[in-house]
Image 1 (cartoon, rainbow, N blue to C red):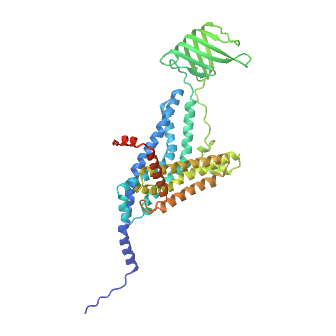
Image 2 (cartoon, rainbow, N blue to C red):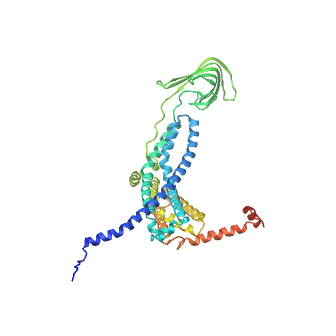
Image 3 (cartoon, helix red, strand yellow):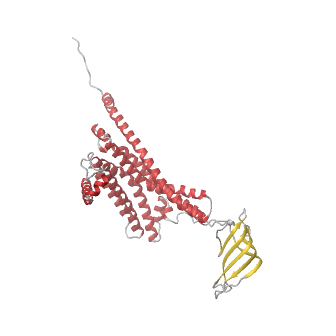
Length: 434
């Protein structure tokens, strides 16, 4: 007789067996998470690029118009546009992230990939884990942009714009263009030499105070030739005119023409732009730490109210990205049994309404009509609770959709609108004959 003795498995053997059993499931989850992130990456990058390009191109047009008016190098325009990137990125990130997730879910539902995932035992909440992780990362990035990057980039943009607007005149004339040299003197010439200072067919309009200092005298001057001489060290600009006529206007409105062989007009000239103000005079140019510390100091109540509103609005706006997956995923799943446009339209309305509500409460806080802290955080908490309710009560594709009554109303309204269209017109549009 053979006796086989067996001992009870040890605790280490049980742990090893459990790990072996869980490993295939963990690998499956890792593959699903990686696949979902790969699907999200492309639409997110494309939507961000499109939105950023549209916003920057619109602003570049206005900046080049300013450049044409004031003069200066194109490099200043591109430097200002570069400093606008953090601002526009913060604005575009929530919408791009939300609609990218929505497009991924809509695609997976249309191609029955979501059916396969649910059939394999993955819940909607588990499928959403990689999206929620991306939302947390983007929320931290958004808070960093709003709280610490934008204040410096906004100030740099304002500083470059100030330098462009207030850049000193280089004492050169463009043919056929009126140049405001300052101190009430405007200058134009039909022909200008290569260096921009030898002038022909010159016209000058000058406004100077009279002897009493209470009134001004307007003088029009024409000359055959002229020359601009800039003495930068002495801070003086001299316009030397030859063979011309000066026509001052008297108090009674009369004009006297006086011919001259040579006339010099001198005025102050500076080649240095005025200094720009220091950073921090505007609450939008202050970091989160500076806003918090400044608001705690004694000072005017309206100033402290603006600081508090700016501080809380930035945090609420940035941290709201955490809840966007909880909104986009149920909206995308609902499209399994409803038209896609309904989910996209409703999502857009919710995002826009939430953004406008933050701006509205921030404005009320600036005016000291409300306490901005509780109001803004209450709005953020309400948005988070709404998204969480929508997410956790959505059981599957088109099942248990909390907003199903809203979609039924959309279908009802669309049917009523369609019924108002004459049958003949509908037949013509579809190419049918009655």
